[in-house]
Image (cartoon, rainbow, N blue to C red):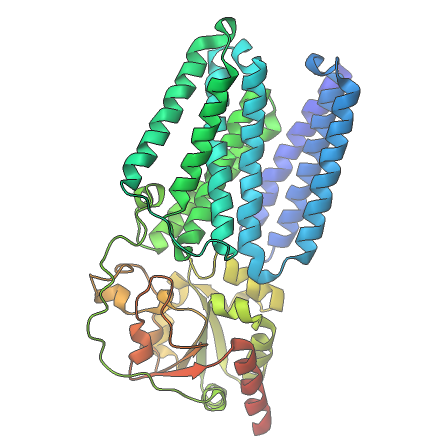
Amino acid sequence: MYANFIIEAAYFIAALLFIYGLKRMASPVTARSGIVVAGWGMVIAVVAAFLYGLDVNPRAEEHLTVNIILVIVALALGIGWAWFSGKKVAMTDMPQMVALYNGMGGGAAAAIAASELFSGNAQAHGLVVTILAVLGGLIGSVALSGSLVAWAKLDGRMNKTLRLPSQQWINAGLFLGSLALGAAITAMGAEAGVPMLLIAVFFILALILGVLLTTPIGGADMPVVISLYNAFTGLAVAFEGFVLQNPAMIIAGTVVGSAGTLLTLMMAKAMNRPVSNVIFSQFGEGGDGDDGDIEGSMKSAEASDAAIAMYYASKVIIVPGYGLAVAQAQHKLYEFVKLLQKQGVDVRFAIHPVAGRMPGHMNVLLAEAGVPYDIIFDLEDINEDFGQADVAIVLGANDVVNPAARHRKSSPIYGMPILNVDYAQQAYVVKRGQGKGYSGVENELFFAENTSMVYGDAQKVMVQMIEAVKSLG
């Protein structure tokens, strides 16, 4: 009795810590402490689940020693792998790590569903529990395989978008087939006994569906994909929490699912794509990609010239992109910013919602370099300021600053909100070469009269800019 009370109290405390931690993550100032708070909540939830298996669950008594050993081995492997990979991962690889860990969450939910269905425990607990187990298994399996494909794309292991003939019909067939098998599993119930092959085919179809949903999607759309599968994982965990009667899983899954859903809506809005396009893999199919005739020509500039122009400016806006992360130039960038600020220049950072390879990627990158939060602004908060900026500089961004999104209806990015870099008095673009962005669209900003290209690796360019500014003093 007392053990049960302690376990339930632990779950309640863990749930409170999850919610409070998520609330603190809403602000960059308190996000770090929010992660720590939620992490302690997870520790408490794991300990409570372990105690539940020891003291409350009668099904575990027969194989108690074996179960304890398996749990300890699993915890050791999980903690060891997460600690090692977390310490080792570079900032440029953070998006694929998030995708991979998110997939593990979906896979865990699917594994719980498989265990409960194969053993007949879900069916024995009634229709509602069986339905939730089936739904959680379906959604978790899609999140697992889909997240693994997203990881492969982000990590450069899958460089092409793969579209099958009649892709949407195949996806629809897999989805309906999975639902039909799930309905059959539910209808058979505990008394009839569900063939193991039927359950296995159900999970195989769900895993294939996750793969085929994700393979047609290009790398530029991965931020939306990651947030979508994050919502899927949360939903699957919540369903399996009901199956196991685990309140911590229910609350944590619900919180993650709702947060992921809201983030998906925000990402889709930032790319001017309806959520239905996210789900049905219509990314990049809105236009024919015709660049048309772009007026003007690209003009190159030396890094020193750009640095001096910013040094004597009154207001400078910096737009970071994935190229900045690849070059690991965020620390040199902030060193340069501090030199400008010392001169009295008003320097601000402009962040597009889908800059980088995951939601918030640029914010994390700048935070790692120590950039103060009060000079980092989101698109809607800073876009009107570009008209008053003496200089705007783009480091490794492309599609999110392309003016074609405003007027070129044939463009795949038409209608997407962009940062108004072209409105600045002078714009500089730091870029390795003259290649196009992920959308495959030529960037009109590069040809604008007030734009100059600074070619080179962002790290080396920033070093040259710092040296140029220091030489003035």
